[in-house]
Image (cartoon, rainbow, N blue to C red; front, side, top):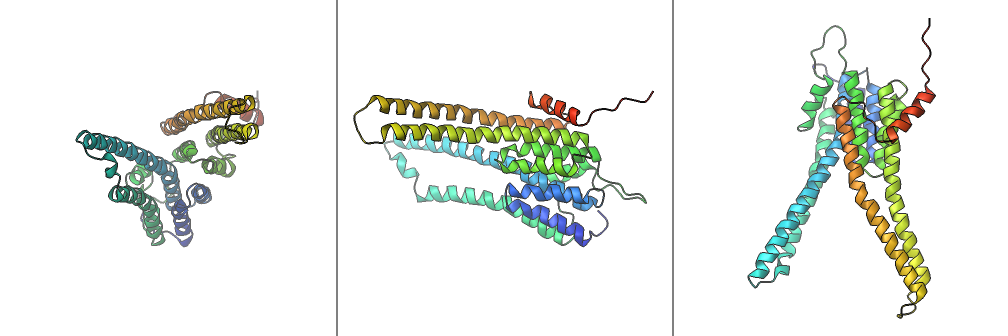
Length: 310
């Protein structure tokens, strides 16, 4: 970028980066800024798309990193406890104030790093600088064709790659419970009428995420229903088992079993969303099993193809 960005460009860039401090809710601003500045400012469009990627792809990597660290910590801790107890010591003493402090430092340190990057990005953009997130920024710039030397005619970002990036981030945002819907919905509403590919990907993503969130809520409702039935039939009034008490206990057990089965499916659905985003970035017009076909038929009915003139 050779030209100094205008105030409007910097405002959109700053707001898009800062929206990351409101996880989930902040997904709306980058898509809105990109839609508003598309074919007006490469600088603002790139910064908005970069901020969208950080809030979806970056959040996914951050969350997975935490899970990996937790698994490593548990394995190391269990091994250390086993070694100490095998030597005749007290393994429980390992979980003292020092260990708790280490866990807090790792957790809070990760949160600080996650929120520090977009704040630094916002400050840099406010000063008119061309901010890039580590690793992702340069790769995204290359993918979008950002930074190409300007000629007499404007060289815009690669249109198809813009649509693919926004669509992919919509798929990946499934990992953000409920609020992840903001990415595909805003893309659908703001740009869906102009771009068929983005429309299809956004609509099927909305349907997919509604299904995923519905399963989350359904799991909670099933468990609560079983718990309410258990309380209604037992009431904790008698210590002796009764027929109604056993029925209540069975209802509670079944509700917990169904809830656990649903929760075990959820990681697979999240992986499917990540896979869909990856395939879209690789150039595929990805379709979710069943959902994709249903959405395609619905869209075809809404926009019928006119017969060619003879």
